[in-house]
Image (cartoon, rainbow, N blue to C red; front, side, top):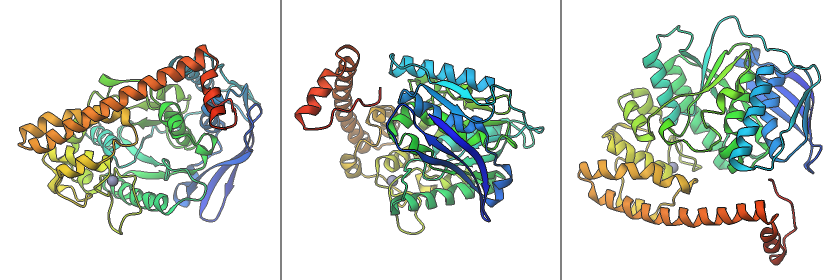
Length: 421
Ligand SMILES: [Zn+2]
């Protein structure tokens, strides 16, 4: 893949960095990749080749592009990190993948670090990033190099449509309202990055399993004139790690000499993190977890989807659901648990819901505890079937060269594409 014409374009209300993406080994359309930030942060934005490289290399690696060529120098620390990351992802998911070779036109040169150390957090106003912010405020006095002074926010990250739907626009508006309020309360300068980066690989499973940290890190490196470190709040605690796009092993590999990327180190589960921030007014007033919409004006979360019900149940367990103003209801009903789906990531359902059963019993809510236990049995059954299906798919790919897949597609009259390895 070639990244051509890296440049900075200023408009009256924003600054934009752009390059042309041309695929070489995969039949995919060329397009202009951009990152944009509003006027208030436009002076901090630069067309940093390291950022573009980071954003594009894992989609290129997944599509088995032989090389990624780009203009300008690349930091040798990032080069080494990216080859290590590709080796890790290969080991996790695709033993036959070959690394995509990094070819910068100006060779490898260490990136210059900003004179004043400055830390940023990727903020979504969800449980994980609010907890990382809370912890940072407990650990470091304001003014300390590690104390967060900036928050990075990528609107519509989960739904990167070219023409955003009503739902996507509503979601971005709700999330921005929460994030702006948290940033104001905590004295964080907000760096908003709008990008079409996910056009490189819109597959949500690719982002979740492989690309997440690299995508986030690429946005941070655009601000390396100002920032020297950026922290990703991971979804999973260090006690329960598995291969994942925000695995804490990956983030540091996306560092340069100018900017260090880290996954926040935490041993706490989601429930434990929520328990910690349950007494923090800023969190309770702004907690944003819901991807549904559009919602009526003024609401942050729908209160009906799996993620809302899970968070509300957790808040109930922490005995603060009454005080959290971002949900439309102050209680969770058995019927709501019974009819909810198992969410966007069914394999994670037991991880998130199982720890809630015992505390609910202790609170005298055995009705809810029972409903959750029944739902867990169902979800585990489904996860088992999915894992068998995945094992067959892998055996077919690695041992039979995709014969079952091809036969199945032929039987359904579908074209025999090679698919991504
Ligand atoms: Zn919801």
